[in-house]
View: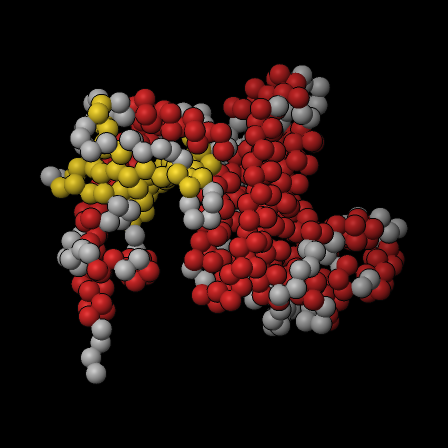
Length: 430
């Protein structure tokens, strides 16, 4: 028995994509360069990026949408409206509408079939005769515009999306948790409900972050740090609560654990700010110390808005990192197998954590989340965490005080070990 003809169709379409990948890439690069020049200097814009649909994504879409029924395989990639995807990313929900209006101002020359082009760039066309934003199957609005670009005498289709930071973050998380993760298909309804709730929470984050930008002059530096931590903790908690629910089928509260992880991210993580290359700890510390405590609010506002590593920038950078994680690979509920060799009191602290890491659900879940966020091996990341934890609770203490702290640590229930209140209590033992 032979294979279905559809598989020959898919292989032919994928081969055509491979053969023309260089041309698609050059067209996408030219398009991105133009859009960045036209809109990149607008204050609301974070950046412009592009991607070419991969072989695997192309194959999935052919089967999912039965594209083999209507278009010859050798023409499919040239006729797909989103073979090139371009994203114009902005800060807030309100900026999406603002940038769309800017696009309509720039693409002001009407062509045929509802397409428009800039007065000085007829090679780039956008279909602007349809209402925006449009609504997706999940009920959420999205600015998604079809277009085409001429390059080297050929026309290439693309899809332009305008997305705020939170919407961009949301769509990629949804894509990875549901669309790209067959293992979670049995939880579709549960995940749909949880993701709807998550989207509502992220909308609140957008509002909070907007307030930070709009009211920078009215906030003390310390309050900005606390707001940043609260937003990060809220975002991570919503994401990982959905993941834990999907893996276990049990709703649990992990808010205290995500707060502890955010505390670590800001003070000791291997995370680097994309905008500066510095560690989070270095960036935040410098942001507090560079401004004199007696500076007036207007001076602080001007400095923060001019500063490349302001808190909005940090939030943008960190969320870009978080949304790139492979959430489908997080092994909630599975044993953690690590072996570490530390010296002295560091080894004692590590032993207390390792003793219950596979017997206490919350401690186990904390480290699964922590390992997914950090970028080294589990053993390396565990060592880094124990070093950070030990230095915090033992710093500046005499040998006798360290013994007392270690004795108290060994009495703490495993599920309480990573929590911020526990660390603060141990820090204060004298």
